[in-house]
Image (cartoon, rainbow, N blue to C red):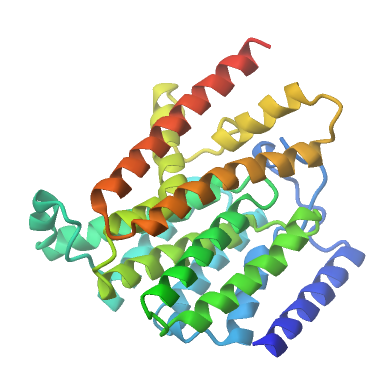
Length: 338
């Protein structure tokens, strides 16, 4: 694993050097929502690096979803390259890929610990649609929160950390190598990301959202002593960001799939920028990301110790939703009243 890690780091350094030296991809114009924290253009190829690591580390877990992972990453890369600019068409392609993946690999849920929902899930068609919808929410929610250095990469690194602890505690060693090697990949990319050398891009966001959604569903289905609400807790932030954004945009009669600069992490960035006027954008960018992930680490830490206690986990999820909503409107009010 150490040898593979060194190879991965060398490939990242070499590819990044070649692309930077020759100004490949640097002529691509950034969207407004990608400019709010950093005006300079940074290579959006984090998804490509993660995909390269799949070959190097040979993640056997990915065999059943490898093709779909590639297609979704490729859709994101085309978006980054401005070759696939229609949000509606990207959403259609995502739905199509996710539905086919769920169907072909029989990815279903048999228990949510809610009697009413479990009864409906007995109908296979509803089960397929429900699981596909959940995966789609995570994929796009991950893309929504990808706006600060290290925010998404650190978020999923924290999830991996607690999954590794949970696996060691419950003797779930069948995927331990996959978890550790993926964590190494994300930590390497995190260094590049904080140094403003690499962005995940849409390709990286789609890849991580899809990968973790599938993995966590399969983890729960094979280890049902874990509450499904522990899985929801781990993914609460991108999911709620997505759902909250859809409701918010509809209330302002905006398209729910059009990117904007009114997400929580963007409001936090602007709020801290008002408070620390002499600090650089890069400093505030990094601090904003760290603040959000410290909060998430804290709630995951509590959830990890009660991973089978549904009532406690539901309470944590509701607390997170309340704090998110309160923080969102508080930041928005202070920014508008500046």
